[in-house]
Length: 330
Ligand SMILES: Cc1cc2nc3c(=O)[nH]c(=O)nc-3n(C[C@H](O)[C@H](O)[C@H](O)COP(=O)(O)OP(=O)(O)OC[C@H]3O[C@@H](n4cnc5c(N)ncnc54)[C@H](O)[C@@H]3O)c2cc1C
Image (cartoon, rainbow, N blue to C red; front, side):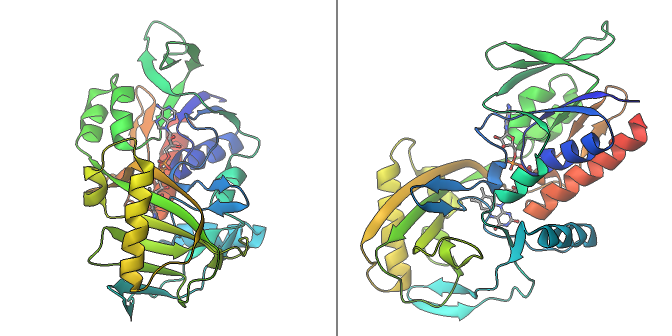
């Protein structure tokens, strides 16, 4: 029977559930606080540049994800990123052990979320503040925005946000709220930068050691990207946690200085730079539950923090929750 289902969060996990349940004939509404879908797989478009400032690439360990990636490749929204990845330490480069193929969305990481959300009822710029249960009603769940606006009544609700943002939304099912409150997430700063000339390096990305940086990527080496020399730098979480809010210029200046030190030579002239703080970038210790589903109250939870902290984990969490919902709702 057709059910009215609300999904909070339009990242990979929430969109997987939304896509599958919509395709099964349910009436699904997705609420997203940002301007568009994608969550931590978003792309920042700035002037002529498009920076993947969150997830950098993804790999496949599980056959179910490999099969989906193959479909996306055939559809032309995913391609392999074959540029070499290295380890960078104080001007010295060494090779990495990672032997899996690496994939990215094309022409940008956000293309995958755009495709998954095609034809979905997606309500953006709307932060859900309350998920209220009213047993007396035929349709038991009510969703309200953080400013108290009534956003509708639903037969089932799926919370697909990072764990700390899920806690207040799970108040009606205290066991789930308690599980989510046990997961802490680390911050990360992303600096997006373009230079007036090419850096003389022959890698596409590098894990950085002994630095405030954790990772650097030459965004322009990813497939189907604009050719202009553009880079994304990610900081170490411990360093990010110590940075005070509201000083992006200082953050990106320090990260660029660290990039120069890691390379062991000065950087070319900067044409454009910007930074973004991911307050909830990665879970310190993701849980192994996969997903949470309470069939009596019809409340579900999914996200990478329940299934391994990566794009693949978010996908599998959404997929497995969908299967549980289909069994339960028929
Ligand atoms: C800097 C960085 C680098 C990364 N690098 C990689 C990588 O190289 N490879 C890899 O596999 N993974 C990487 N990841 C992790 C990967 O991005 C995530 O595992 C995955 O995207 C998580 O998807 P999700 O759907 O679980 O959550 P999210 O993408 O966080 O989606 C949750 C959504 O919920 C929305 N939301 C939250 N609260 C509310 C609310 N109250 N109301 C409405 N909407 C709400 C958010 O705006 C967001 O869009 C990286 C992450 C970051 C931040």
